[in-house]
Length: 230
Image (cartoon, rainbow, N blue to C red; front, top):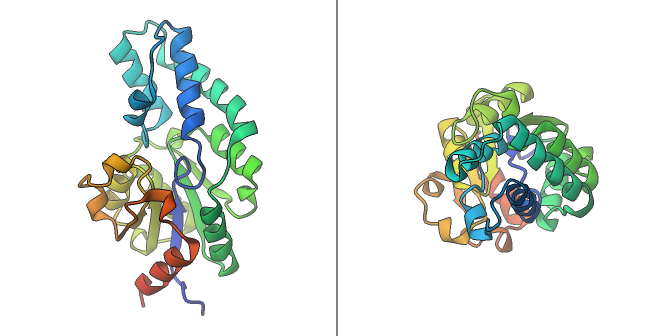
C-alpha cells in the first residue's frame, strides 16, 4: 500500500497546471476587438479567471452589448485560443514534477476545466501531460460551470472515487468554491495575488498565498500524504 492509497487528485488546468492565462487574454482581446471592443485590458481579463469560456462570453455579450450570438463568440474565441495554445503553452515545472510524482505512486488523476474539450486535449498534448492525465472533464460536458461543483463531481465519478477522497488543485476563486461545494479538499494556488484573501480560498486545506512561486511538488506531496485518510 502506498502513502496515498485511496486518494484521487483532480487538477484545474488553466493557471494551475499550465500558464495559459496570457493566451486566454490574448484570444479574448483579439475576439472582442473584431467585434468592436478595442480596449479589453489584462485587468478586465483577471475578472474572468476561473470562469468557463461559455460563461465568460455570455457576460461579454451583456457587458458590451454584442449583437453576435453567444455560440458564434465562443467559437471565435476558442479558435484563436487553440491557435495560441498549440504553440505557446508551458506547464509549470513544479506542477509537472507533482504529476509525475503522483503517477509514480499510481494515484488516480483527472483534469476538470472550464475550457472546451478541444482546448484541454490540445494543451495536454503539446505539453506532454497527456501521458499522465487521461481522465478529462470540460465544463461543456456538465450542466453548470464553476463555482458549481459539477465538473469536479463528474471527474470523481469517472475516477470511481468518493468526493471526500478527492483533492483538488485550483488557482481561482470559482474553482476553490466549486471544490468546497463538491465536498473535496483543496490545495489553492492563487493566480491573481490580490485574490488570496478571498473567503473562498479560506476553505482550502492548503493555501499557498504566493501562488506558483510558492508551490513545490515535494511540499504538496508531503501535505497530501499527511492529510490522507487512514
